[in-house]
Image 1 (spheres, rainbow, N blue to C red):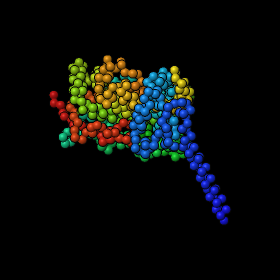
Image 2: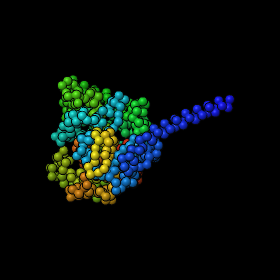
Image 3: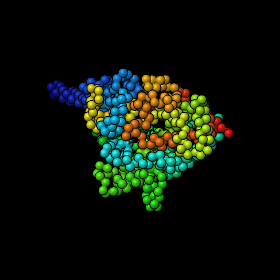
Image 4: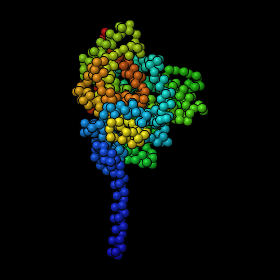
Length: 512
Ligand code: HEM
């Protein structure tokens, strides 16, 4: 009996030990990578790598990257582990420029894993990989030229007019003329992207129950689903293949799918041609989806077209509105900078004989410096990502980046590095004056990325942001109020840089 029991216990002990060893090996099997390649790295802990605090929600990814960036001062790069997955952080601006610009052919993709059978809407331009990406980008780029933007100006202006009516009404309704700006600007940017990417006049600004705004917001709202998906992916993409967690809420995907489908069917039936992104997407569909003679490398599917409408909505709505909100916040705190913007507006109005159009906006150079400084302090994305498509020997260095290696470019940390931006916490648009701009180190200012994969919507975003700022600053003076968080607190769970409690400001009407 004793012999039987001890044999039984031995069997359990050996089995458990084997299971523990297998699990431990799984949790640590990737951790020797940086040691072997002689790359300085942050010591990982089993399974979590360097992500323990992030996984438990105690630290924002932004702070993690900042910590690692600062820990490796003096180094050109550093290795880290997102759970089990090894990532290479590049700190050196010269290597950054090589990766994203000069040697782009080695790093053409963002390297974002997605299972298209579970997330069909993820096949937007951002996630599309070469060679298909080349054809898709080539087809979509004409929709973003300054000629096309000039034609879209009127549509955006209409949204700006509604924004101003809404602000004037809200200011009157609220006690002490105080207003939360992130929400109202979020509705404004939803209207703009709704009209340009979906061809619809949404009027989200006056409709608290707007479905577009509701579903749009849900894409950026932190949730357990997002956290679980990210963690599973970092443990192993194979795990995600099994548990199939969606990247975006299913309801939102269905909503955008049916709206876009209805729009293009209606336009095709009624031969409607407009100057907007829908038109560019419909042309891309004719050239790369329906065209039988297209080269297989360039061939896209119906899903790619829909995903790109969705991608433009995703990339272009809350990014613009949060940057605008941060800009108003900084202007409210710096009355002298705010006044200077207003003086420039006045002088340009008389120079342009009162004609406010696309060219007028491009001539607001000081406002441009203010926006650039806002994007330095508050870039919505805090890193750029790339993946090596081939093995790459970094010139004049011993580093060899293996094929398939994921790369992080810590743009937020670079924007706050005092070596490149002295007193980085200070909001100083003069950093981007014509004289100072030429002194900036290339590869250290990347709010829109750079190289062939640079944000396709830069000029569109700039036009939209300048229009909104012009409208607001012409009619109101901004001041902080009792509800303004100074300094700002950031939402630790948000996927973009977002204020935790919104941004409250006092609006004082200008009577002239
Ligand atoms: C302030 C606003 C915006 C910021 C800060 C921003 C930033 C970025 C960044 C950092 C990237 C990645 C670039 C890289 O990897 O080098 C990107 C890509 C992209 N952005 Fe924007 N963006 C903004 C607005 C917009 C708007 C308004 C649109 C469309 C109307 C847009 C569409 C896209 C698309 C489609 C891509 C993927 C490009 C590709 O992979 O070829 N973005 N954006």
